[in-house]
Figure (cartoon, helix red, strand yellow):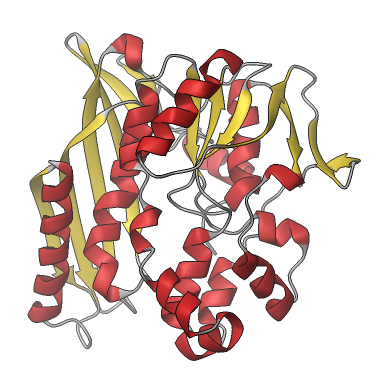
Amino acid sequence: MGKLAARELQEILNCITPDERVLVPPQVGFDAGVHRLGDKLVVVATDPCTGVPEEWFGWLLINYAASDIALFGAKPEFCTITLLGPPRSTSPRRFQKIMAQTCKAADELGIAIVRGHTAMYGSLKDVLGVCTVYGTVEPNRLITSGGAKPGDLILCTKPLGIETITNYVLTHRETAQQLFGIQKQAEYGRLVPMQSCVREALALSEVEGVHAMHDVTEGGFVAALNELAETSKTGFRVKCENIAIPNEALVLQRHLGLSDAQMLAFSSTGTILAAVSVSAKQKVTETLQKLKLTASFIGEFTDTKERIIVQNNIERPFPSQADDPYTAMMTRP
């Protein structure tokens, strides 16, 4: 479940006719598209939202797509909203509650809702939302996931698996209390806003020397690092001990019998992996500190095309495919 494998996705995209007005068309590894509009560039991203805690549905619906816009250096400005649900369990009141959350989240980011669609269909099993966000950026300020350069440092803005841990706490409250304790369970239950990276992405986009950014969503660090390397035509070398791994992620790993590769694939929406020049390291660190975030530099991009992870001074190939256990974890009793 989740995203298609890169090869399968590429087969779907092959039927799209190239257009000279589109600078970043739909392609593997890019979470937004870019087209020209007069002297400016328009950045467009669309994301679904389903299977999340309903009290956060509207907020996440807006922030998922808005984060993708900000990662390209554009301020999210406009959006469209689609809300669909099954007739038996979706009352108008349920849609109204979700839409109220959505409007509040859009207002917080200064996003205008332009259009939408709401309906109920018998083929659906749960509420599904889709949000498309638009933003503009000057051509010389555009950042994509394909801009990493050999020698760039790999920046990580938040600890591994915050999204996975938080959503596990919200969907498995009793088990989470037993595993983490009541205090930690309560703390993680308040961390849903960490699943947005709009603020820090916009701040980092203003720093000279930030060459590429990618949100660590489905597939976690495994998918995001491989996509950054693939789109930038580089390799990388990552030191495992430099990755901030919460103790709760290790507890979940042991409790569920997960491999190290699966933990590296923990969905971590809201965490940015970025390619940063050595000269920008201090400025990036200061920028994140102002936002009460800690900059972790976990490795560097290389020109060898090899993808290496170092653990206990032992080098081994970085996982080539993400085995994200998120869906199985959330649906497990």
